[in-house]
Length: 260
Image 1 (spheres, one colour):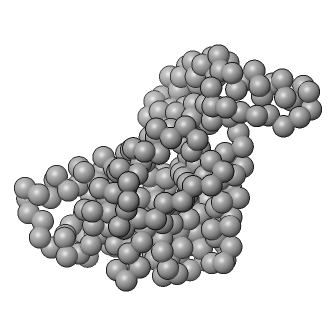
Image 2 (cartoon, one colour):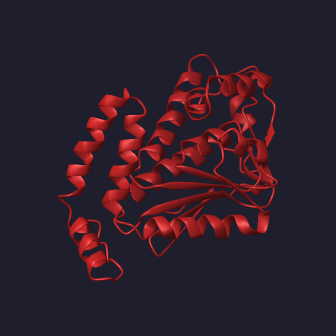
């Protein structure tokens, strides 16, 4: 489908999603979230697509937050619906079954930070800034920020960022575990695409099952997580890709995975 606020390109099993509202620093409005929801639905069903890279148009912002014009009109009735809708879209991203890489090329504030948190991996330019400034507007994070930030970086970090509303640098984000790597601005997208190619070269079913083991296992006691891992390991042994991967290793050639 055609998108007004997103640009989607696909090449060699890798899809690149660009949030394209540069005059508004790529702020998230309802239309953008609806378009992202539709795009993710298509991505889930696209067997040729193996990895998503998400970034922002321009050189100032990844996503500088929600559209304040829409936020200002929310009521006690429409507020929960807006929050639940955003949470559902980001849950779809987080549970897509295909890895997502946030290439954070500028401000990632509010909903932008929350969207990055829902991705599998986060890379940042040296000029990127992260924050959950909702309390400065009299609201709280509503797209999962209070939950994912605490799980990823710890309760103390989540309290500090969500209660102060202050921004942090890319280097600080890396120090606290919010970001995996920091690059110079001109190198960021290249690095994200390079990582995406490394992931896309692996067996798609094994990648999906590995993600499930990590995501679901984090919500379980370790003993249950280990049981889940063993069950998913058994599932991977039933795939054609497992036969191809082990055979290719023994034959000293590159594996040709089909995602089966």
